[in-house]
Image (cartoon, rainbow, N blue to C red; front, side):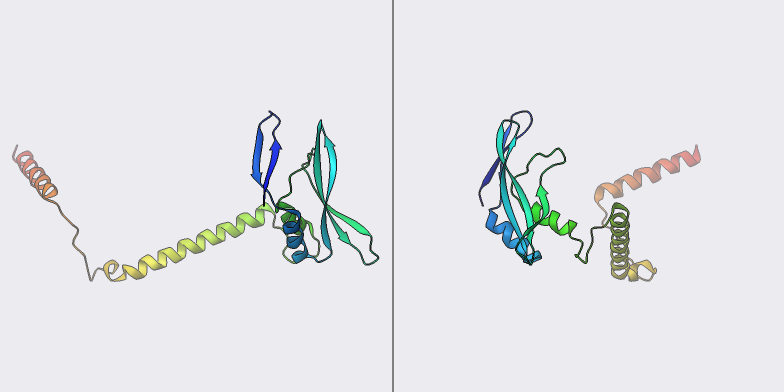
Length: 162
């Protein structure tokens, strides 16, 4: 893997970890053996950038377009593993379809509730003998706490007789 250099709109040049073509193709072929990635030089503004496209090779040998790795404004993105994620997400044959926001929120809420129940059950199980009132553990008491209680009792006693 090497670094991929990209430039922001303000002119800042960023160096990011990138993947090589062979690694992306291996990941794509694990998903579907017919997929392959190709780089097409594209003129974007005054820069010549590579637009990465994914094609599926059909039985007759022709190529069918699957995905282009670019933003909505047609800005080409550098080669990365997000190509594989996008192809898997858009694949109609994939059994695990991408969840929408409501489904993901409900799943996360159920997971948090289950974790809270599990933690609560573990705490109850650990402190069960102390919670039923049959066993108690003395709290650590310092000398300063003892003296503060004596002062408070003495003050209450004086207020009572005044």
